[in-house]
Picture 1 (tube, rainbow, N blue to C red):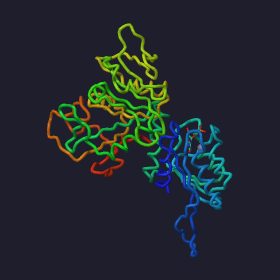
Picture 2: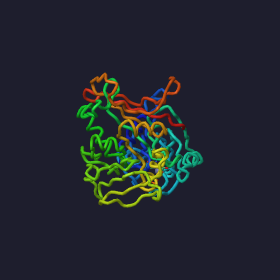
Picture 3: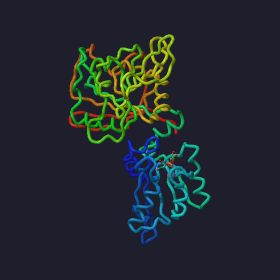
Picture 4: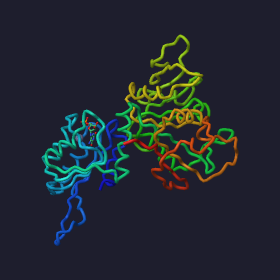
Length: 376
Ligand code: AOF
Ligand code: ZN
């Protein structure tokens, strides 16, 4: 039931953030004629659809009623602890209490101090409450939200396409296309769900990408961010030429000796410049992320870059999730570009480790999704 709730909740991706994706299933435990517990029967489904809209629990209760079913005595399975606060909507725990549900099964506690406490309130109303980690997908669904509440940083997804032997471009920098068309459609969809898309100056100089979502209707418009410590971004770059109020660009560059750190409007409409002090010619990437969170309310950032910036992100341990596309080809050239560079590893114990969340075939490619393990 929680797996199903997680699948429902995930449908809110790109529409609900910075609030959590949340799914809810209401089911009634059937009792067989001999008194034994039968298969639970689903009587209501709901998920948080849009930022500011009704929460998952309220949607699921409404679905019960629309089906002519009473939630009285039934079990609500929710991916996140029902809220106890009046935010943009009234508290979900009160809605569940009023509806008379008998039991609430929850995948994760709400880390948001403003909304937490729902479980205790349900219990004091006589409802049985169980927390469980049995459904990994239900627990993981709120990882981005939990990270933001705990650290103030956005959820960071790295994406790249590589050959079977792990290269993202030939020695001359050619990379179009290692992955197939269907993979690229998925990437455009992902671009349409994040708040910022970040790349490095190397990629801009080599590929001149536009970094926009060009498949279907994007759910949100990402701020395009170019990390350019030495201020080499040419005026003619496509990211700048396509910049507008609706499709903004943030040019992040090193602050000169007597320049102040901070963001200011750039030369063209839709372009702003963030100046940050460099340390050994390098940018403090965590500072960029926290700037994106505070000044641009970014809850999610997609990094699509070459090995240099990617290496910096991994070195500073800033990547939460990876989407790796493997196209069916081999270069066998050690001068070809790797996805990540600049980290020294002598022994396996030093390797950064991730969990495989999903692997699937996409046309002739394989897409693997990895995540860093999150503390509960
Ligand atoms: C959601 N959707 O399904 C649940 C949430 O500002 P509000 O009123 O929408 O409340 C947002 C908070 O409510 C959020 O930070 C989280 O702590 C809690 N639960 N939020 O957006 C939901 N169940
Ligand atoms: Zn709620």
